[in-house]
Length: 301
Image 1: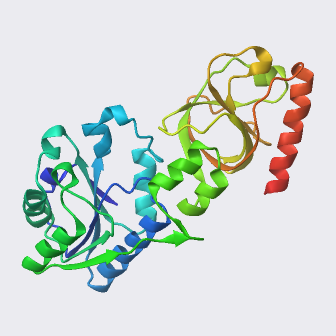
Image 2: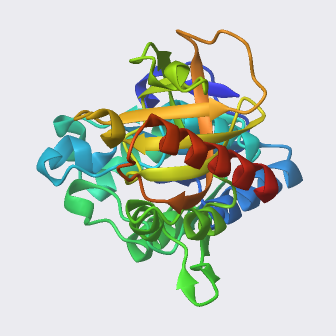
C-alpha cells in the first residue's frame, strides 16, 4: 500500500483516483462498506482506490480537553484499511493551521489540485473544513461543478443499532467487547509492548506477558477471554488486589506458549469479559480461579 504523509508530499500523480475521506476510527462495518465500494469502483476503471485521513484525529488537535479515546492506533488503522483493498493512503497532518482551512478551500487545494479524483465515495455523515462547516450537500455541489461523480453511502445498522465509532466506544467503555466486535466486524485489539512486570504470575506458576499499551482505549478492569499471537489467552486488566496492588496492569496468559517475548510488540484480541477482578483470600484461591478462567477460555474457542 502506498502511504503519503500529507497531500503536500504527493510527488507522483495517482492513476484515476477513486477517493474517500474521513477519520475511519476503528474501520468498522460501516467504514468497510465505504472502502469496499471505493476498491470496487477503482477496479472497474483500472484506477487507484485512495483514502484521505488525518493524524492526529481532528478532535485531539483542536479540542484536546475532550480526550477522545481512539479505537485503533494509527498502525492498526492503516493495516485495516489495507485489508479492505485501499491501495493509497494520504495521512494528512491535522494542525491548527490546517483546521482553519474552509471547506471550499480544502476541496480546491487538496482534493482537486493534489488528488484530482475521478469519483468520490463518502459516508452520509461526512463533515469537512473549518469547524466542520462542510457538509455532504456542499461536497455534492462542489463535485457537480467540477464534473466529479459522487456516491454517498447511507448509514448501516445492525439489529436497529447504528454502526458508528461512538457506539463502539460506548460498548468498549462498558467492557462489552462482544457487542463492540459485532459492529467492528472483527475482535477489538489492544496493541502494546511486552514489559517486565512484578513476577506475580510466575509466583503462581502462571506466567503472563505484561503489556505497556500503545492503544488509547483501555477496557474496564476485569478478566477477559482473548487471543494473543494466535494462542488462546486470558487477560487481566486491573490492580492485583490480592497482592495489594495500586497501579493498573494489563497481563495476558498465553495458554501453551513458552517463548520469551519481552520487548516485543504484540496485539491482544478481546472476545469476552468473563468476570470482575476481585480480592481473593490468598494466592492459592486466586490460582484456582485463574485455572477456571483458563478452562473457560479454552471452551469458548
